[in-house]
Image (cartoon, rainbow, N blue to C red):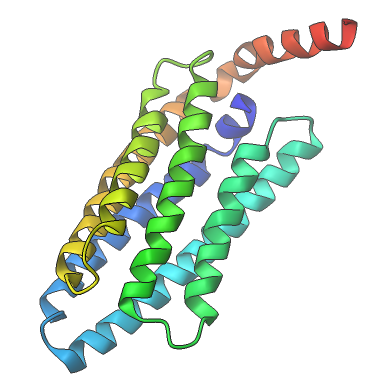
Length: 206
């Protein structure tokens, strides 16, 4: 899996930058929450932007995972991540009568599942790089903010949106940091993959 992440470091960079941009959009959206008419327009834009970027990044992640699996890499964590993100985007995009509270719950569910995937991937990276804590941090952030969102009263939309913005920004910066770290490791990809190859060789021998 380490080879797959290094080869697709730009994917983590894009997702991190999207998360940061989404956080900025939410902070721009917050002043319109008290005004009913403006709130509806801003909410439509918020939901559409999130859905489009979620679907786009999710599909790119799935493609990268499938290509990696075809070369023998362990891609199930990346594949699961892409499926969750894509599914969340499609739900928000096509579900009729979706309210802001529903969108918040969908994002909370996505964050919780993605957090588990990120923690699992971070534990896997511990054998290869010293900055695996960035992915672990992103995973714990996802899980913590998902729980906060789930227990935030539905009527308190401003607080829920603030939680989402903080989650997106913090997770986004962690993802960008990891992507830049992986980019530096592109020339060491074969050495980093050696432990995985050794494990495969032992499995074949037994």
